Image 1 (cartoon, rainbow, N blue to C red):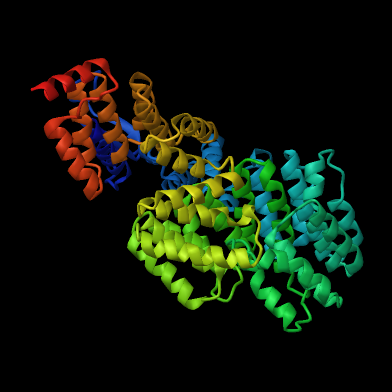
Image 2: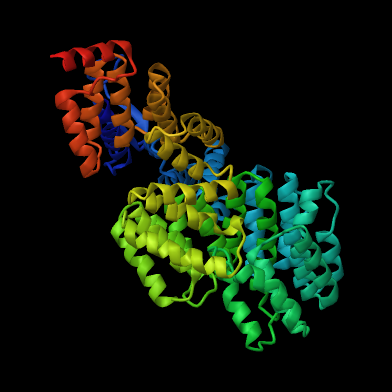
Length: 596
């Protein structure tokens, strides 16, 4: 079977690597390995230099790790190959790229010091500068970055890093001027506003800093670290009312992101005087973090990851950086890399609820029950946290505890309505309650909730998919359902679940040939979803491909279907599908059966 082939490949590569990497006695004065066969002369040994064999083994392991999507193993393997031959710049490039991908900046720095400066890629140069910054070697930061050529966004990052190094040398005016250099790209210049404001604070120019923070907020920049620092600045200069006005609309909302502002709002109301006299390392990390967060919407996710990894290397104990990096990695599917950064956020951090929420979803993919327990524990610890209660409602729904989930969402909706939240803020709650009500068989109420969610988020693919599928499965408003699902496919074309929904809506519309094409694509993208295989079997049956239908139904039974799906599949395997009265041939069969 095809599913067995990767195992054979893995075993073959593992054996080859083990043979090549193992320690063997010296075979000759050339320190070689003897292999007891030769194509040119049977029986004569083939001599391989052991250093070449070691490099081959390491590069083979690196290629294999990349092939099976194991970036950590690839990073280790390529670095191992490079250290066996540090003169090989191709190996250096591969090893650097692989270690940048997983955030192993210590290794990137170690390797960069072994090659000529001209061979170092831009992000390795930044890593060397970040190391110098973390060690307080400000002159080395400036020296490392001076004259280097970077892309526009990396130039902006490098300029601000140099500016903080100048600030560390007591050159506040030069630092601000460097961070204010015109790039010619308006988005990048705007992205630097909060970072420049932090430089001004360090240079004791508070009022100018407040003006820059105000400008950044007018451009809707919403760096959590930057806004929190700004609120501290307002408190420190006696502008308590302004600090509260800044924080209230951010803190008193139910999103996970809002949970970061609740603690400082409580301090504002308790009379706290604010503190901007933080240590240099914290100051630089927060300043550069505001820059990265402001740039991220216009940059590829991998570049944002690389810059956040640099900040984590600069300040490994920063809760702000760890939370931002962990959430970014999790949001883009790098769960294994995200977990340690999320887990290191301290329990007294304002980012704790947000990062524990993200961690709970990582746990859910392997152990839904444990994830639910963690959600309950978070609510027990933070009973007034709207974000924690929302996580619990979502976890109850994901674990199909629909009665409890419906009640939890209902309570959250009542609280949000009492606080006059906007539809843009409440639609996830209506979406969650609508899903729970639909699964409980309360379709009219569910439909009302789902339509509220769709009206508030008309281009949210999950909402379009759920509502479109629910209507199509009931045979209701099929044209509307097909339209929503086509829009969902446009927004998320590689989603097997959405393709399945669209294919099923075509099936329910009697468009069987079109449905077969779409469901075959869905099965190719999501081969492990029982529902997709079940639906594909149904469409094959309706198009006269009965044997293929039974193959798909049998395959669906191997893909952990629900108890209800299992029973339906067993009936279909025994009896097939009942005739379709909308098709002439099937209608004739039904008429014949009735006459008999």
